[in-house]
Length: 371
Image 1: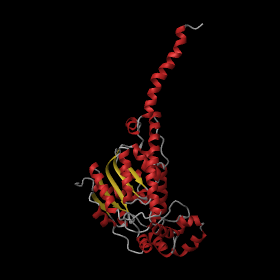
Image 2: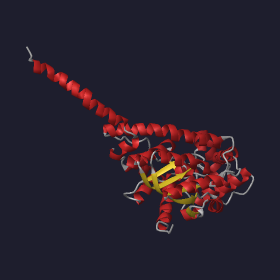
Image 3: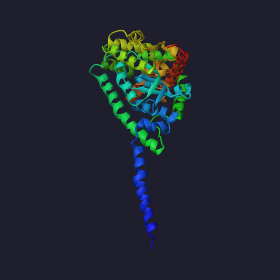
Image 4: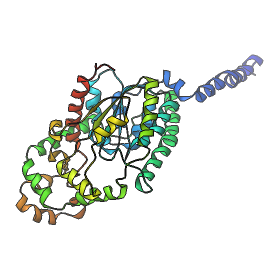
């Protein structure tokens, strides 16, 4: 027959677990994200950057995994598609770099975004805004309003989910990579595109896109007409509020004007019924806190029509070889492939690498500029 002390041991263990261990675990569970984040295993560079590669939903909310950002890039789909986050991180070893991109980012996006950073105690040393011809526009009542609303909902709801994910990750000492593209897949993509790029004559490609009304032209016209081209009446107020916040936080702001092909500018001007605006000049006048505004011709960025062509498909090489035979080859393609031949205003992965390398050169030259 077991002794009385032997019978008590399991009961004492259960009592100790219930009164001491379990409350401690529960308290850990309830710690807020910023506190847990202080001692949680920091997300490694590759998983973090993988989640920001062409991934709108992950790029913004994953910023809360890092309490401080040395360099943060913001902007619309051009920032998403033209910034190679792996290249940016490689240029600044030991520093935290991040990206928050969302379709149709204009001045009205900064208010909810800065509130989001404040909510999760994320500080930024230097912010780079990739601005473009549409950055001065008004959201109107259509597509842009829906996109901005979706952005605010994303920052509120997805970020809350991200905090919960971080808390669980800290307790389990795990941090799985967000969905995205690995460094190996990225390198393979760029190598494949570089090989195709070298076999395409940019003059012939220019002749093709000038001569033939490709589906990409219709898509660009649709976007211009749907989003409207009215100047944003709140632009000055939006940017004044942004400067007030950045100056209070001692955050440096630089603006990079996204380069466009000549034919892209022509299509936008024709669709909007007026000349494209001088974005750099207007932002220079509206932004009292901007350190630098960088604008270069597209050739100075090392880009041409080939960096906007879909270089991932085996049929790409043949179809761009000769303007005279293009029509017949184009007609033989399925409609889905015709639509994927090129994008007039977004770079491919090779173009993103080249653009980012040039951007790094510019940033490094201005790194020690007086504020």
